[in-house]
Length: 129
Image (cartoon, rainbow, N blue to C red; front, top):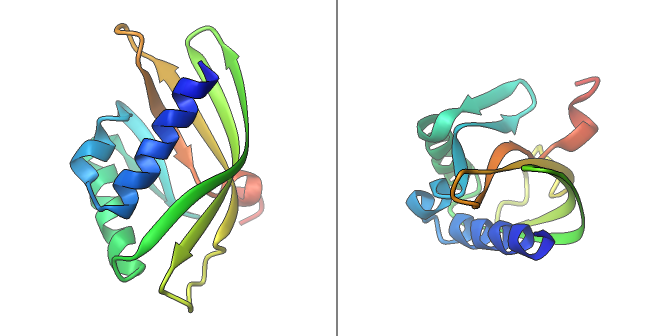
């Protein structure tokens, strides 16, 4: 299970880098939530896809996410992922940190596939924002 989720996250990172947002949406639940930035949340695949397109624009169409240390805690069909995510970009004046401690929540669907239900690249940094 851990390796499956790590592989999915790697595939998502590659899809983001390649701006292959149709493929990226295959890894999200229909009702998924993406924290775009503090105070801004995208809900559902359509909004999430649009958000990733805007993120690509923000980073001048050059963003390479990679994962560092990762901890996965699972209970039944739900998994919490705590990960160090590093963002590499040509954009040097971003107001957002390029090293993040993210939280993801994955759910296993009826077909046994793990899908991202909550994608929060800001982790607990949202507290107090």
